[in-house]
Length: 102
Image: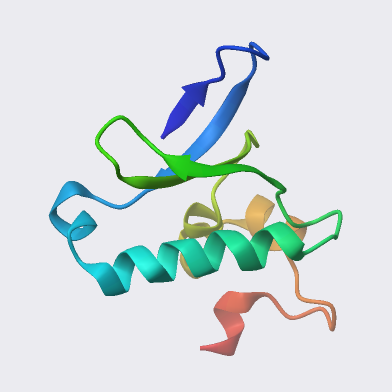
């Protein structure tokens, strides 16, 4: 889900729990732990966390840098299908595409 920050005027990625899961204290704690852990990581390939908070319904959320492009799920699907453009772009370090490792 995306959100536009009011004060900074930029789009960010918003992560929350589905309403059906939000009442589960364990899942809420896991989302908090995830946000705190990811916010400590510093690497060019890790999306930075901008904000952790509660929304108007007292639901936990966190925001991250919005990244455009293909999702990891879609890359894996295309690799499994053997789409050559994807296979050649996303080879593993030793040269074997993921689809050949199954």
